[in-house]
Length: 151
Image (tube, rainbow, N blue to C red; front, side, top):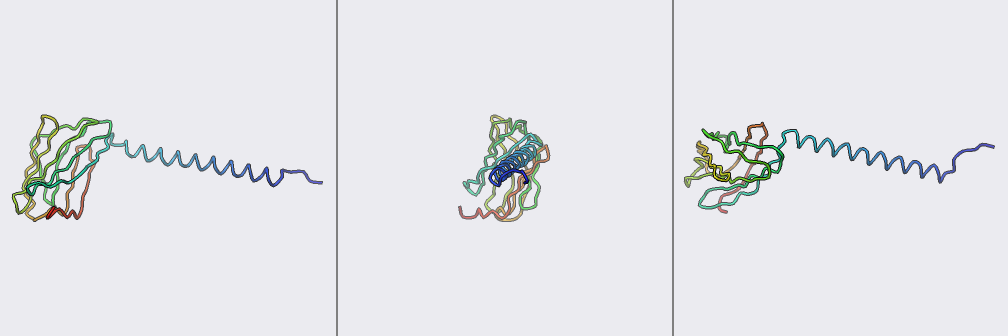
């Protein structure tokens, strides 16, 4: 006569072990994802664009825990740089306006509170095909194939 666990008890134990392992894996995966988003200490979200007089305006939101500065902007493969920078504090937002002369983009302005940083450059291409925003901590936000004409 052999003694052992019944099929019902064995099934219950296996289900409990499987659920426990699943919960542990989920916690581990989300812990890694959370650490990856905190590696810069900054979570930047960009909303927009909204169009007005051929200018494109984006809202940059710093929902992270550290201050961030915009290093430079690349529009249609042309780099736009500034001689000064404005700090975007945690929990704050900024307005980034990409300025058009009616045929192509010739500059950008970042406004954070009372600070304004003007970015100079010339895209020499009509429309906004690609836009890349690069922050001083190395984080980048890239938009490709934006169809902003006629909006």
